[in-house]
Length: 303
Image 1 (cartoon, rainbow, N blue to C red):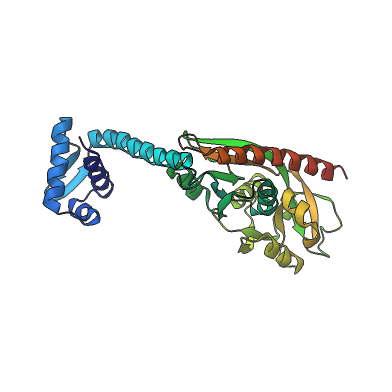
Image 2 (cartoon, helix red, strand yellow):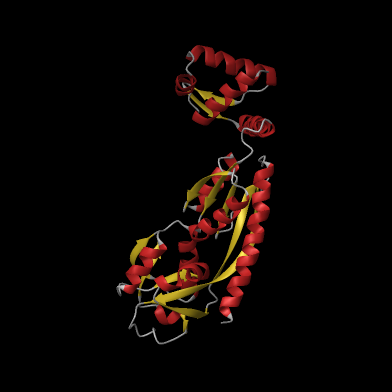
């Protein structure tokens, strides 16, 4: 059994089409068919169901594919580890963030102590996309407000913060400090785009309050959302961290008494992927950073 056979098998298994697989692999279709047949002979069992020109991965093929995928994942991780040992990838960290408000201060503080580290950053991606990138090793970490569920991913909570409601100047709620969310059921909302963790979370808050929000506008920039609220175009949910960093850019904020509107921010990584020493140091730094940030939020709440 050769590695090239396994590579060809993965391609055929993914496409379930011999001609398309041959084209992608840039080899002759008869040669590919013979390679797969020899692999099946070595294993002593067929891996595909064949009917005329149609092929489909059978139950034996599905079991074998999982093992083959693991082999190639290990090879990929071995290459990364060798690159680390040869000092060619030691100082690079790939990071996805669904809460970009904290990123500038977080990275600036870390880079002031580790100036040779390079970051590749991804912003505001749907949770499903981030999970795939973690599992495929395209990113080292994700700092997210949505728990990423997968047996091969570790998600560690960092901080829990309150979610506030902001209203325009002169709004009937603007002379208040607290609100029951059900009172806002007839208000137009300015929301994040569908598919992102914060939008899913705030939709759930509204559901718990007994209503489906009327969406007047959607966006992905907290400053723009704040400006739209100032112009009287609707009300919006804003996280406590955003208010802490940009309090002068938002109109009046109200604490929501019912339901309890909070979110937990965490850091996620794949337990099957190799992480450089630098990446591991960054994870510990992130945990310390959010511990200090949590202390700041508590002090701000007590003012």
